[in-house]
Image (cartoon, rainbow, N blue to C red; front, top):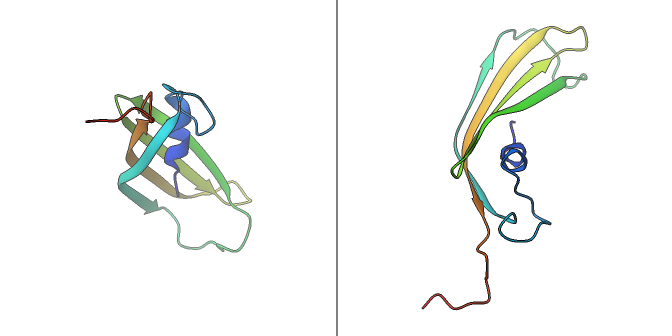
Length: 95
């Protein structure tokens, strides 16, 4: 559920930006979810609050919290991943 796109934004990268700030790739290393209450309806409205606590050196860590309409915390999620900028000159041969 967390999105590494938030971590990429925190690092200043974006799909529509020019190198060196152009987003090259994102890959998940791990993700987890912890349920604090199983008595909630997933089809009802849930507030999802995300924050990127760390982003840099090609890595990103994103946390999220899910609340019911009544404001009760039902789950906490986290995702760690690799975030890379696109190469500066993709037309140049690498050999």
